Length: 180
Ligand SMILES: [Zn+2]
Image 1 (tube, helix red, strand yellow):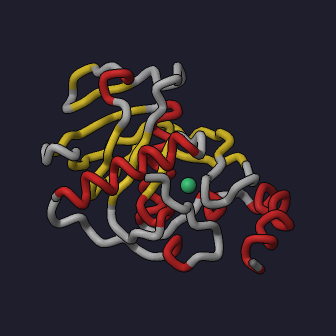
Image 2: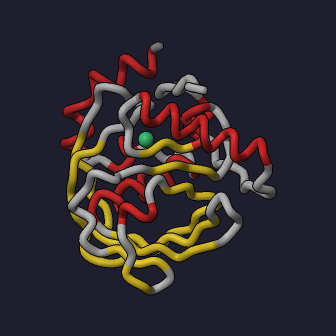
């Protein structure tokens, strides 16, 4: 089922999400609906608060990506295609590498794109839908998508991470959301 994606100005986007305590059938259905919603919206990631569910749950699919040149699961080299789509439950992150700039957008802030500086490598620990917990290290688009989605679970949006110049550039576009 395709769900409604909430837009900037909705309070759920600013909430700190609760941990997922049990992975039950309802959780599996939610993940399936989130994936369907993300594909329908042509996004590469979607976090539960974006469909008004304040839970630490996100989905990512960056299958068509060649920027992720560094990818390990539990310390071993991994293939992107084998991991996608990725379901992240209760993720925690640490970071490595220099900070890099790249353009980001968000399905909850449609039409706004801006350059965001983030660490080049993310080390993410999270639970999968089958209940197992993995440690994933990635750079490139996957590393960036993980950081963007996990930010959502903490009530943080990519527009919070813009430089003052970049923020000025999108100020007028953002005002439309806040007033709606
Ligand atoms: Zn987003």
